[in-house]
Amino acid sequence: MSHRSRRAVAVAAAAGLALTLAACAGAEPVTPDVVSPSSAAPGPDDVQYVALGDSYASAPGVPTTDPADGCFRSDSNYAHVLAETADLYLTDATCSGATSDEIIDEQVPVISADTDIVTVGTGGNDFDLFLRVLRSCLTSEAARGSETDAPVPGFDESDPAGDEPPSQTCRDVVDGEIVPTAGEIQAKMGEVLDAILEAAPDADVYVVGYPTLLPESGTCPDLVPMAEDDYPVVDGVVRGLSDALRAEAESRQVAFVDVLAASQGHDICADEPWVNGIRVGDDGTAPFHPFAVEQAAVASLIADML
Image (tube, rainbow, N blue to C red; front, side, top):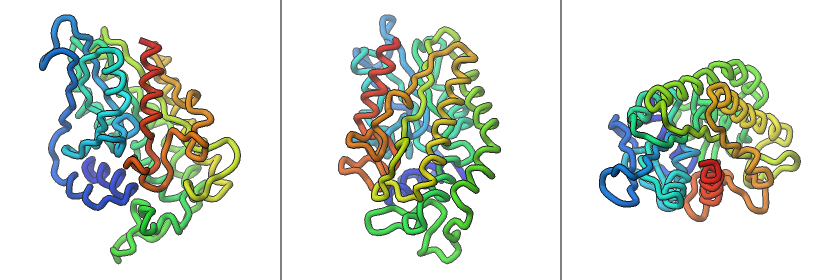
């Protein structure tokens, strides 16, 4: 699956927005957003900040989101919030659907020797990890979708050539397909960090983990329609991603932003969730993606570490 196709599936199929497919057509390069506190070009006194990452950094659907280049960057994602509060010159290269390899190829080149701060989050799209988990772990009714729930990627009742609903169980897929790729995914995370450190050896790098998605106990089938026994399976996948990011960050002595810990009690099922469930949020936030409140919290976490 191509990068552009993955972006379209990750956002459009999840959010049920068919127009996204058209917006993602083509193979144009990532065009970063540039937000300057003082001038059109960075001055000698500007602190230059480059944000890299996937959709958990770009925040698709969080008002206001720009679909122009298929990256679905929000101007309220944590990079923009951090740049505004800390008076940074921001270059936001985050992009929905980006894999670690694509971050290296398409986003890291935005970094220069003059870059002072870099944030990065990656891993969820490697080997289509998140998409495979969604396809396998949501119930068959959720996979087929409805008027308000988007179909799971890979299952399209209108396409007779499309895949059938998943026959393997959630645990089958996680144990048989996801777990065996864990080492490769972690290695790719390390490759991203090595590329960043090579491009900007003097920059302060902050590796941003993933938030808590599911509660330690209990379920909310209206928001996350999956079997009760599968909740801890999916939770384990997310925790594994964050643990891998932490390990790669610590091995290179760069800072790790522990969003998983900070978001405890703010899972999808919580009274005050930081991440959206299966439906498009009232504010437009894409399904299974962070709300604006999570992005603001991540910005605050990073600001406290600067």
